[in-house]
Each structure stands twice: as C-alpha cells, then as structure tokens.
Length: 614
Ligand SMILES: Cc1cc2nc3c(=O)[nH]c(=O)nc-3n(C[C@H](O)[C@H](O)[C@H](O)COP(=O)(O)OP(=O)(O)OC[C@H]3O[C@@H](n4cnc5c(N)ncnc54)[C@H](O)[C@@H]3O)c2cc1C
Image (spheres, protein in one colour):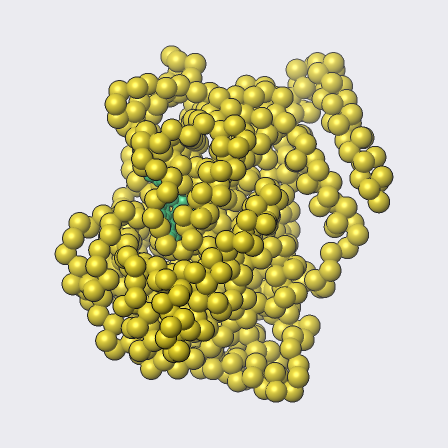
C-alpha cells in the first residue's frame, strides 16, 4: 500500500500504536519510499483516509503536520494553533487507542471488512426496514424548535426535525436565501442522506458527478497523480460523489424545508439567546428587540456562533492562520470558447493544482454551466487590503492573487472569474459542550465543529448532523427524554466530526507541502501509482480485488458512514435500554408493557409489509 509502511501494521491490519513523542519529521517521505517497494497496488497517497492511518502511521509528527501550511508550526513553535491541533491529535490518538482495543463502533464498517460491493439480502432487508421505519416514525411528543441560521446545517436540520413531526422556525440574518457562494462538494456519506430525503433527481439535474481527482504541479503543470474512485467503491459507499453550487444546494434545502411546513424568517438577526431555570422555555432576542421562545433552540449559526457562546460561557480562542481562500466562479460557455480550457467544465472530476503552501481546487457543475475554483493562499503573498473578515460575504477583485508562475491554463481560468469571495481562515477549537446544561439548546454544523473553509466535508458534516438529530428526535415521547437525546447527539457526532476534520486537515497538508524531501516523497508515491495505473490500463486491467480493498481501506470509513443509521443503532443499543430500565426502576409494569406493546405493534405491520414486498 503506497504511503503505509507495512511494518506499522499489526497482523490484523490495524496500524500499530506509535507514541506521538517518538515520531520524527522525515516519516512521511520514508514511509512512502519504504512502501514503494511493494508494487502490488497502485493506490496513491490517501486523499481521504482513515484517521488511524493518518495519525499513527502516515503522519507521525503532528507538531508540523496538523496544519495545511505545515511549515508554520516549525516557525511558530508555541503558537495557539499548534497547541490546539496538538490537543486534537492527542484526543484523537486516545480515542483511536480505545477504539482499536474494543470492537469497532456499531455504525462504521471496519475498513478491513470490505469483501464484495454487493450487499447481502439481509443487508438489503435491514436497510429497507430502517428506511421504512424512519420514514414512517413520528415523534409522540412534538415540540416547537427555533433553528438559528438558515444555511446548509440550519435548513437541513429544520427539514429533518419537521419530517418527524416537530414544528420548526428558522431565523436567518441574511435578507435572502439567494446569497452568492461558490461550489460545494457532496461526498457519498452526504449524498445518500439527500437522496433519502427525495433530492436524488434534483441533485442529478444540478450537480456534477465526480469520479476522480487529478493532481497537477501548480508551477510546472505536470500531472503528478490521479485518484480515481472505482464504481464498485461508490456503490458500496451507498452514494454518489457530487459537485454543486453552494446556492443550488441551499435552495434545494430551503424548498424542501418550506414545503414540509418549516417557517423561515429572513433578515432576522439573533442578538442573544438564554435558557435559565426560572423560565420554562429558552428565549431568543432579535436585533430589533423581538423576543421569541421555543422548547428547543438549535444553533446552526456558523463559525461566529451566538449560541455557542451561550452554551460554553466563554468563546474558545480563535487564531488567525494567516491564510485565506479566494473562491471564484467562471462561466462554462466562456471556457468552451478556448480550446485549451474547453474540456474542463464537463469533466466528471475535481482537478487540483498543488503549490508551495497553496493549492487550487476546481470543478464544474450545473451541466458545465459554471466552473468553481477555490484557491488557498498565504495572506502575505497577496495584495489584498480590504476588510479582514471571516465568512463568505467579502467580495474582492481576483487580481489580488499573482498567478504568473502557475500553469498557464489555471491563469487563464482565473482571469475569467465572474466574481471572487475572500474567506479568511481562522482556526477554532471545537467547543467541549454542544448541549446547554438546561437540555434545551444544542449546537451543530460549523458552530459545533469548525472545519477548514471549502472542506470536502463541510456540507457533509452539516447534513449528517441534521440526519442524526432528526432520527433521535423522532423518538421523543416525554420531556425528560429531551436532554438525553441531545447528549446522545453530541456523543454520536463529536467523535465522527473530529475524525473527519483531522482527515481533512491531513489531506490539505498533503496538497500544500513546501518543496523538500517530504514533498518529493509524496510526488514519488503519486507518480509510482500513476505509472502502475497506466500500465494496468494498457494491459486492459482495471480494478483487482486487492486494489479495491486498498481503496476501501482508505475511504470506506468516511464515505460509507450513514449518520442516520448511527443514530438508529444508538437508540437500539442504548436509548431503548434506558427507557426500559427507567420503567423498571419506577416499578411501573404498565408503563413497561406499554412501551413493549408500542414497539411491537408498530414493528409487526412493518415486518408484514416488508415480507409482502418480497
Ligand atoms: C453565504 C455562504 C456561502 C458559502 N459558500 C460556500 C462555498 O462556496 N463553498 C463551501 O465549501 N462552503 C461555503 N459556505 C460554508 C458552508 O455552508 C459550510 O462550511 C457548511 O456547509 C456548514 O454550514 P453551516 O450551515 O453550519 O454554517 P454556515 O454556512 O456558516 O451558515 C451559518 C448561517 O447562520 C447565519 N447566522 C449567523 N449568525 C446569525 C445570527 N446571529 N442570527 C441569524 N442568523 C445567523 C448566517 O447568515 C449563515 O446563513 C458558505 C456559507 C455561507 C453562509
């Protein structure tokens, strides 16, 4: 396996534990070289990979690896960014140690379990059973919820809660849903949830499928590597990889939520939230002085969350990374007029130009009508002198970046930009608590687990949050269950988001490496994989079982996850158990038998229905 030293693995294929302190900076390069002598597969260095590999085998030195600009940690040894990343890495290491000494979590398929892309009849039956049950289940106790923030996490959550019977009011500070963004990626772990919500057709119409990533050297234009996702892997993951405009995804979620009875108030900026013991319900105060109350407040208000502050009491320290994203949209028809660019808008791929502490990520969408590029760039290498704001509302001239040393096609593309949005990258540690002590306020989306801007999983984690919360809240029967379900949500989601967030940081690091032996090692791994791929194609071979298994090892953990199933499994393992034992502790056999009867009476017709459907 390219990128993994086989010596790092136990007999069962799990990476052996390596204390962080024993690591050294040359590890990535040497592990790439060591493994390159094993030509049995052609997998390039991971772009989506399991955190276990990243943290214990591939990138052993978190002191410089866990930041997209890597080098900065060496320059600023004691920076707060570094401390936080170290803290995250250590937490992750500890969790992974615990994970590997016990059985894998019930919801994530273990990487080595990849056998065949075809689900068994039993898998299919379970899946249908789950889908039918979640689609039919409505909460016995329906509550009033205010969701603060009407972007991806807020609208998805509003829909997921309304779908199981709750009444939802979304408060969004922007005057319109139709805000300009650029492009956003919908990985299989996310698209499967959207398809379940009935958005499959719309996604196929608006989004572009993505089947591979091409890695070019930003300066020489050389294609250094290709990562291609095998059809079997996409099928096994249970969802397509889509590329879509941010505004299209947001509009789809808005329409879905509103058509399901969600009320959305635009231009409603929340100034403060509060929940205290003297009042039954938490309250929200808007900028214009209006006070609203609800049974539950959901904070989906992004990086600068007002709700997060109310939950944690203090804001976690935010640290400037001294890097920003410059994102542009280009009209596809202009590109088609230039023979050198004409192929790009319709490619089912996500090209990447890798540079020295910078990278350009691009893709087409809307049937090639629009082309999006996100450029990650050090601030000091730009002429930008406008407001230094976070978020997606700072428009600037694309001319602030100098691409004159870059691939001429990237230069041409960039010059065709319709507009450019600058997003400052501020590093924030995730808050320890997502749930207010009152049990009536919860955080999700970017507010709960800040990721890199333009992360591959920004929409993914937000929509997974929504699906998980919706599933848990469909179980609500009594008021005292509410805090338990919210805490279950935090437990389920926090680890998952931390794992995926670290994987994203590692991937960003990999594609922004400065010149040096580590970058040479990365490129050697990529080139070797590319050569093997080309040779296999010449011989008419495509994917062997070994290659599929290797790729599954790399991406199965992230892509195959189903957030809704994870929440359903939590209920079966813990929630229902808690309910049963509570009834027994209360010496209330009637209550117990009632809960058994309700479970049975709803399950029986369902099972009969499924059997009848063959
Ligand atoms: C306008 C916009 C454009 C974006 N474009 C892209 C893109 O092109 N590519 C990409 O990868 N990611 C983009 N993102 C980020 C992306 O949406 C997130 O990374 C991810 O989807 C998770 O989103 P979220 O809903 O948790 O947070 P966010 O998307 O940050 O949304 C937070 C929402 O809360 C609202 N809000 C904040 N404070 C208050 C308040 N006090 N009262 C009421 N409302 C409040 C904000 O207006 C915003 O709509 C964009 C975000 C926005 C807001």
